[in-house]
Image (cartoon, rainbow, N blue to C red; front, top):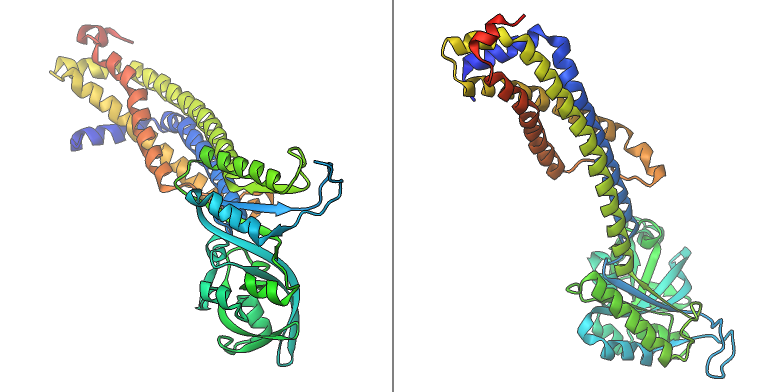
Length: 409
């Protein structure tokens, strides 16, 4: 493999037959180029899906309610379904072995004032677990805790952009702000990968909101994170069972999709996984077909090369060259051309992806790229391809009899 004389002969053969060498490598280079572009685009689609759910935990389930659209048990259409603390406690106690995190949500638009700065923001009253379901990143201070819930504390956690609006570059932690005329202490500042909208939110304890804004036990929504040990199918079955149970508890018709909605991330993740798997199969099928065509092309060209070098191989065998040395030389030349052409195709494909990557975002393709695993896989494929493309011609060359070879035209 590391015989210097053999490598000299291989390079001399390639240099004397430049057109043949270029044609040999072109189909492989094109195959790897196409393979790289297709894999890059699929990766970009996968990145887009991840970005769409970047600010929510992947094991989230959202329980939302609206008005009924079907009569049920003597109750009329258009009845407003209202979640309460008892419904939250029911979910907490009934499914505790399948739940990792659990929170309620209450939505409210509020005016927040600090000195002369005032603006309107969305307020979410939540439980402490909401931090993990929303993937909130605490930059300063802390999040809502259990003691805040128990004491119904007038504390608030504000987004990064809320701090910028009200406080500028000055510290906000520990300061008091007016929320619809009620004084709250800022105990935390957070950021969120979901973007500007998420960073203009504010959070407070759910018990505080219920006490001050309505003096009731109403909640707008229940969010939970199922046990991540559950498979996607098990998580989907859990979500479906919970939906059936809540429909019975809230007297909602089993087919009334308007009154109760369970948005289970497991269903979305399963759909995305199936879609991505299908895309990868298509890419592998197309890329493999192109690569096989390249291998056949190289193999045919190598057969032609063998025919041209018949006398040379006959003389080598007459001088005592072993068949294995001829096979080795032909295979090495084939692997060299294949590997070199493949990496040229890989490099061009990677360059194209990096150049046009930003322009593809409007087609829902984000940061298209080829992972290191694909590069390693491509390397293995190239070596095997070169080995396969060169073996049959090499075997034919090794079987040439010296006397026949010397008589060849």
